Image 1 (cartoon, rainbow, N blue to C red):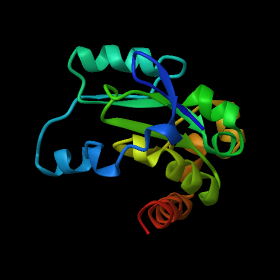
Image 2: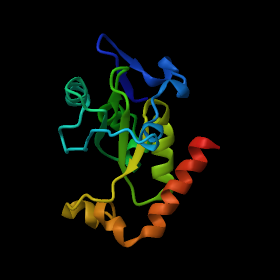
Image 3: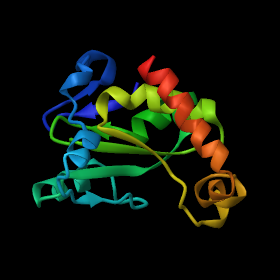
Image 4: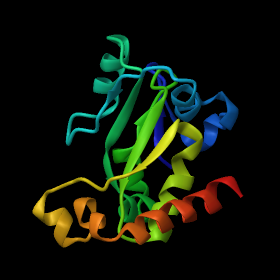
Length: 158
């Protein structure tokens, strides 16, 4: 399981069993017209300590670094390394890179109880990402982007 760092100790996500309604809703804040400051995902920088610093200095929400959905779903080691959060790290948007709806939906389902939002990376311009069919490569496939979120909604909310 991915780990959650509460600043004092590290616990498995399965042990915390936090209720979904305890996670702040980014969407409801946006719908109310509140102006929010988001810290965009940054390669190698958007890990938990940096996000906590940004929140301390006034950010309303932070993104995780881009997480490869397939690796996240298949590997406990990848989950433990790529997704850490704490009770102070809210609201958090987990960003996944995927070219497959099932990997995206399952990755989102795994961490949805610990996030205020889920994001599909459709902007990474790096050549390796485009060659793998993720990031900005998805912009030429709007139907796939829509289907990814359809699968996410089905797995997480139904």
